[in-house]
Image 1 (tube, rainbow, N blue to C red):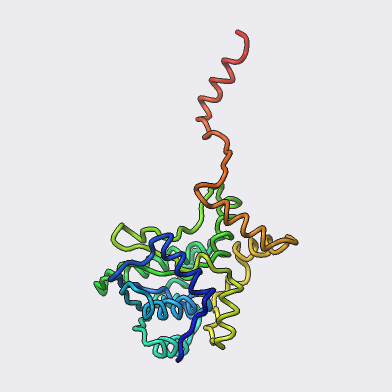
Image 2: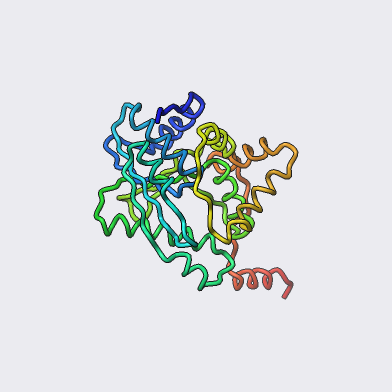
Length: 259
C-alpha cells in the first residue's frame, strides 16, 4: 500500500501532537482499532507519521471484540498487514454484560468495559505501552461536551491527553483537530472497507441526538467551532457560585426574616 496523507491532515495532526505533547521519542503506542472509519484513519495516519516524524515511536493495533453477533475481522487484519502493523484481537463478553444490565445508557457502559479490557490486555501480556491512542475527532469532542452539560450537569469533555489508569499509561487523541467529514472524505477516497457496526444500540444514541441537534442550526459549522472554543480553559466564563448546603440555605433564609 502506497501511503499518502496530504498537507491538511498532516498539519492538523502534527499541530495536535505538538500543542498537547501527545507523542514523545521512544513511545510504544497501542491504537484502539475497531475497524471503523475513525480508528482506521488514525492507524493509517500514525503509520505515516511513524515513518516521517523526527521522533522515534512504534504503533501496535488492538481490537476489542465486544461479542455482538459474529464479526469477521479479516478486513482489519488485512489492513494492518498492508500497513505492516502488529495486530491483536481481545475477545470479551461485554455484549452479554450490556444485555443483562438492561441499562438506559449501554454506550457509556460499553465504553467503560472496553477501557477495562484494554487495561487487562496490557497487564496480562505485560506489554510496555506508554500511550493508548483513540480516534476521537473534533465532532466527538463537542458532542460529548454537550452531552455532559445536558445529561449530567457537568462541564467536561474528552481531553487530548489523560491517564488511562495511572500516570504510567496515557490516553492520547491525535485527531482532535480534525472534523468528522474530513476523515470520511479521506477514507472514501482511500476506498476503505470498514467493519460494519453490529451493535443493536448504535442507531439510537445520545451522541446521535447531539449530532442532529448541532446539524439543525443553519450555521452549523460555526456553531461547532464556537462550542469547541468554549471548552478551552481561557474561554470567558461567568458561572454561578457553588451550591450551598440545603441546611445552610435554610439558616440564611431564616435570618432574613424579622424576628
